[in-house]
Structure formats: structure tokens, C-alpha cells
Amino acid sequence: MDISVILVSYNTIEMTKMALSHLDASSHEIEMEVIIVDNDSKDHSAEVLRSEYPQITLIENKKNVGFGRANNQALPQINGRYVLLLNTDAFVQPDTIEKTIRYMDENPQCGILGVKLLGRDGALQPSCRYFPTPWNIFLKRTGLKRFFQRAVMVDDMSWDHDSVRECDWVPGCYYLIRKEVIDQVGLMDPRYFLYYEEIDHCFAAKRAGWQVTYFPYSSVVHIGGESAKSEGEITSSGRQIESLKIESELLYFYKNHGVSTVVADVFLSTLADGIQMLKDTVKLRRPRWILAHFDHSILMWKCFFRTRMGKQPTR
Image 1 (cartoon, rainbow, N blue to C red):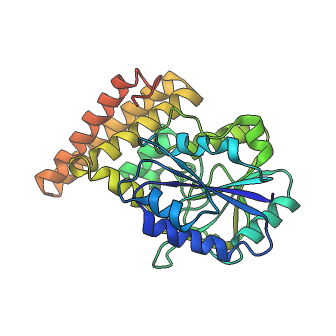
Image 2 (cartoon, one colour):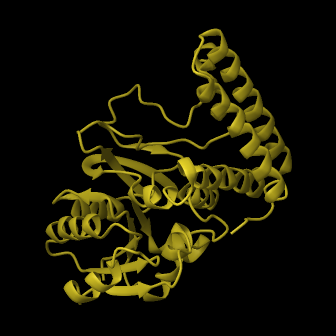
């Protein structure tokens, strides 16, 4: 088997069907198996998939276990030389699978590969990314990057993204992994419910000596946020989603860089919120904008204590 494709489904049945259609058009002569893990969707995703796609392997969860954990559930089913994690709102081009497998075959040092990501409107999305740090997150949030030109940011959108480039991590919406990488470092760390899974995985792969590569010669249209949107509507203003992002950030920093980095992240985040509140006050922005930064700081500190300084997940 050339490739095992894993999709995690969560209230996105129409998107999932479109993703499968594009995937089928990209298969050509490639030996491919498709595994879908449904995270207890409420839109009858599992029923539709069972009925209309009998050829796929369907794993049905009784609750939403998160993105990384759901992908891990597919591991016993995979038979491919490569494993592709594909979002249900990511639509491959007819040549995407063939070109990316060929590149991996010709470059055995490449352990993980991502492609050029485009929005529905054709706009370039961040596709070739670098590891987050408390410092580069702070610079982005405050807009102070212009005073620190040598700082490496998570995203550099200043180049044309038309050449192959080694990077730190690629987004998980099209995430092609050599099976040997999984055998060596595993797949997703289950402590992350949502967000930071692929960052952590790429960190482990690079530490084990593998390259992470951005490949620009095929593209994927990525809508983005569809599953998270359905989760966010459960709570007011999607604060649950923001909480998950912060929690995963703290878990990642503690696991890979220690408690001092977690403390630095919380301190710099609080400082960034204070700076933003001051700027908004001077600019006479609406009170709710100013309060949003205050709320973010409170949420950051709550996550800091709930995770015991990034040591353990809350769900």
C-alpha cells in the first residue's frame, strides 16, 4: 500500500464528502486506503459515511476525543508506506498525492511534508512555519517585530512560497508522514486535545534527525475552522476554543522547553495584553475591545493554574 489517508470528521459531512471526492480524483494509480475517525458528529456524518462510502474504514467515537487522539486511533489500521493526515475541509488537487509521494521517494531524509495552502479565494495561507517561542508570540501580538528584525517569527509571508524549503513545521491539514517516522517517534501526543499537535510532532521528528519540508509544486485549498466553529458555538464567543489554544501552548512549552519557558510565556502574554489595552485606550477604541485583552490575560492565568504550569491537560 502506497498511502494511508486519515481524516477526522466532526460535524462537517458536506465538507468531508467534498474532500473525499477530491482525494479520489487525485488517487490515479496510487494504492490508497482511507480511514475516517468520526468524533461523535451530530450531523449524521457516521451514518452517511457508512451508507455512501462502504470502501472506507470508519471508526466511530461515542464522544469527541480531540484531533490528535482521533488520528492515533487509526494507527492499527494503516498499511501504507506513507500516512497522510488530511482535514475534512482541505481539498487536494489532481496531482497532489502523486507529486508529494514522488518527492518523498526521491528524498529519503524528508520525514514530513506539507504543501502550498490556499484559501477559498486563492489567497496564500501560512504553509511553511517555524517553531513558536514566548518571544516571537509576544512580538506578533504587540506588533513590535519591526524593532527586532532578526527575530524568527512563526510565519514569514514575505517570500513567494514558490520553492522547496526546509522548515520547522507544516500545518496538519495536509500532513504527509513517512511511516518510519511514526515507527520511531509515534504519531500525535494525546495530551493535546486540539492545536499544537503537529508542532509537537515535527519537533520530535526533527530532534530524531528527520527533515520537515515545504513543497510548493502542488496546492491544497483549505477552508479552515469548520470543526472548531461547531465546537466554539457550544460556548459564548467560542471561549472554549481560545482556552484550548492557550492550554496546548502551555503544554507544548512545558514538554519541550521546561517550566521556565511556560512562566516566560505567561508573563509575556500578560505584558502583551497590557500593551494592547494601553494602545486601545489611547486610540479611544470601544471598551469591549479593551476588555477582550483583559479577558485573555485572565484566561491565560486560569489555564496556567489548571494545567499545573503546563504539566497536565485538563481534558
